Length: 212
Image (cartoon, rainbow, N blue to C red; front, side, top):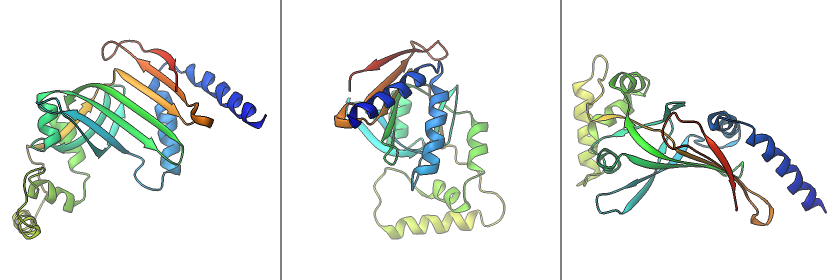
């Protein structure tokens, strides 16, 4: 009997959630809760891309901004993910907030952030991270740890005075979601799944619930 009550309560909450016409409103609520409850990196998200051979790749990146235009993250454009996204500008994202037993996944086309956006974010990074953006040839073979430390020392000496400029090859991507799915853990694996989708960026959203 308690299970029935719990399931009914969760179902009522889910009906209330469905009243939100814009998935960003629901994402904002869930993200705010994750910031309070997750012990580390609530902004961490898995990024899925596809290589020229059709082989998918997944790695963790950090969400740096989101708004109606999309979800933003930054990287080295010459890295593996950078090259894949430039060649095939489509991607998937997944947030997993274990403490809340929730997931949010997104799919959609990718566009570059503007240089002004990238400059603004780069200026907020720690100086050591700015140096690292210059020193690391991300995703390429590294002959030794000493070689990396040497490059860091050289870049540090070059920019010992003044601001560290943003490298041209380091910038951001914005995923413009065409699909956002909210997943909430349920008893006996009877999870709740709510999907928002639209045909193109900026179009109205439609919703549907999915079997667990």
